[in-house]
Image 1 (cartoon, rainbow, N blue to C red):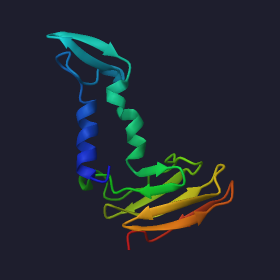
Image 2: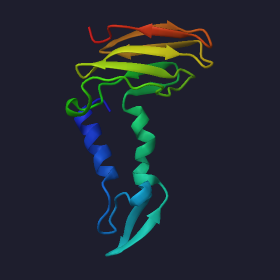
Image 3: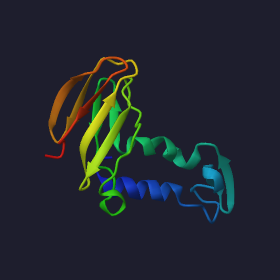
Length: 141
């Protein structure tokens, strides 16, 4: 996900509708798989799990660590503010992007007390009281 153009192409490719019962998304985001020539089988995994991956595009998280990602292609979203990105450990985050890069992140705690935030080769420990929030600015500088 650290390659914005590749992430975008993978998502678009997985969600491209199937026109020949091949391995693509069917209407309604259900999946289809071509078991044999011309015979598609319904799969429930909704476009190879793409809907589960989309929220991970702006923010990579693992327990006790968050990493805002530059994973939007410049042509689609050079700036913007995705909000409520769910992060492991009880830290939803609001992001602000500027010139194609994460510029600011607001981390809320719904139960976690300590996390770290990494970007551009640096990492900092961030204490957040349950129910509180912390904003980190100028990530892109």
